[in-house]
Image 1 (cartoon, helix red, strand yellow):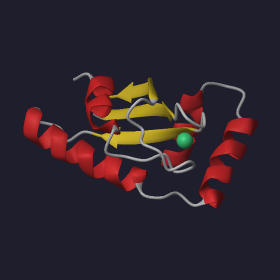
Image 2 (cartoon, helix red, strand yellow):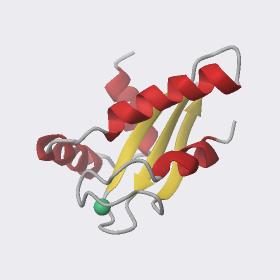
Image 3 (tube, protein in one colour):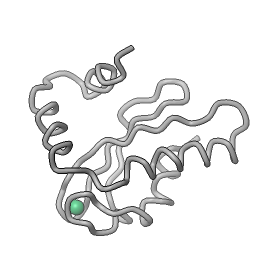
Image 4 (cartoon, helix red, strand yellow):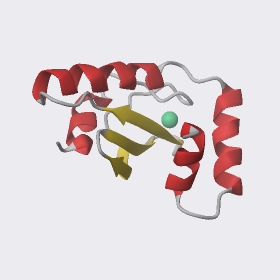
Length: 110
Ligand SMILES: [Zn+2]
């Protein structure tokens, strides 16, 4: 499963939470992959806002289940994000000196 290609195909359907422009030509970087979980950093090519998208792909059958599972998550994340939440992310990233994956694990809470 090429998660970046998967997201790239759909990125045009989503807008940047900051500048509201299309994410069609955003930059995608896979940060973590643990089983069916992927964490991808999305960087808006217009305003350089970077945010994390967490995807959990349904296990088992690939194509269909995988697609619907991931799509649901993407839509959830792509909902307008309040500036408070963005601030939180920036603050968390600010504090973080280690790899970003540490932040993600922390958020999962076990
Ligand atoms: Zn933007």
